[in-house]
Image (cartoon, rainbow, N blue to C red; front, side, top):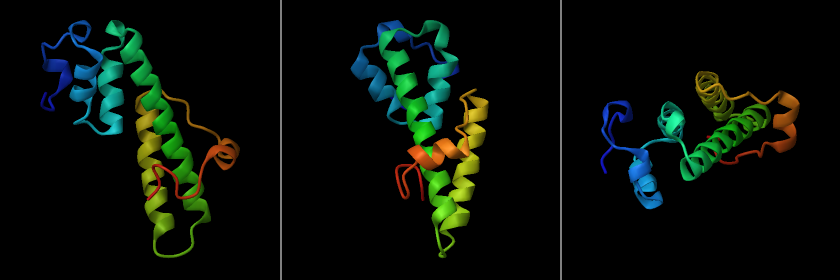
Amino acid sequence: MEKQNFSTTEVKWRDLSDGEIDEFLASFNLIEKLKVLQDNSPNMWRYSEYLYKKYKAELMTSYMNARVTCSQSLGNKKTERNRSICEYYKNAMIDLEIPIPADNICWVLGVFNGLGSV
């Protein structure tokens, strides 16, 4: 399946197998996947709900890792790049109504140079 604006398609979630859902979502970045799944939340069932929660957790993890990395980086503009990606993740989380972890949570759970940092 090719990437498309999901809100205008005739695809019915319940008619897709788990593999077809994975194939459909594969062309989207993390935040687009969350928006597609959120836009279709009234039609969510077990597998799509699982994916939505998985991608929310991945976005939160990416934010925490980038937050820790931007505060502990030295030179090479790594701090600025991670600060910028943190802002991007934060804005996406606000749009998707995902709670933004407090700094003390980021310091405990975030990983320097982990998934989502640059």
